[in-house]
Image 1: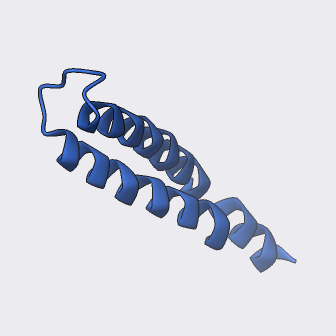
Image 2 (image 1 turned 180 degrees about the vertical axis):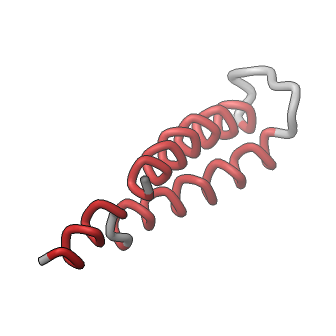
Length: 67
């Protein structure tokens, strides 16, 4: 479950980061502030990557308890 959340955060953060950067440079018109979108996208992307790298999944923890 944790890895699924990490993947969702990573993909969502990457999309928000790209849209924010494009908004900053004027290639795309957004309803939100492009700086806020880029900052939130960066935070979500980094947190998603760290969840994928550092956390054990709940199925792995349950398998270790049984062994």
